[in-house]
Image (cartoon, rainbow, N blue to C red; front, side, top):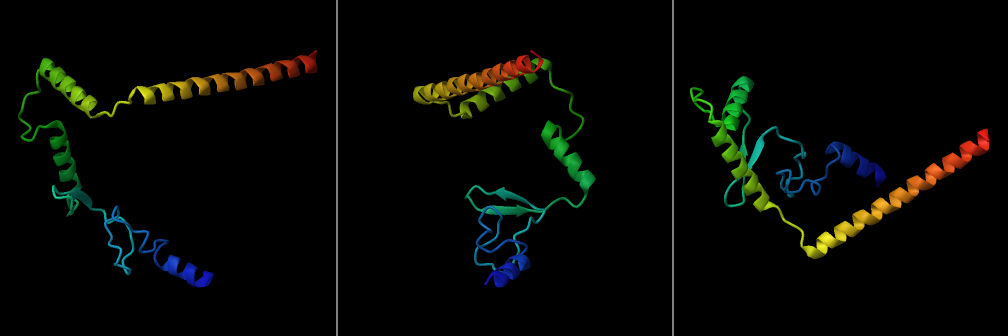
Length: 143
């Protein structure tokens, strides 16, 4: 049985069809396919399904396209924004991100605070004990 199992796992690269879940893009009933990265990006459509997007064939072109998208400068002829506009946009984005944060309620905050204080107290006592032991050991040794 173990030989059969070892052979089966080595044939599939260590993956069994049940290991390949929806996160890898493999279907559970596709037993002949090995669950390996395809090198393609996977984007989600608005209806929750997955859409596979192929990599660019030109690596230099993809870098240029990505950098243009990241900076928002598609044409390349656009002047840099005013410093005040950039600061305003930055603070708007910070506020938008802070709205996405799930803040702890009073009970969670109290629990987390108590856990941190107790942990710090325990570690302080532990280090104090080690320090005291080393001092006693050194004074006994060199007396």
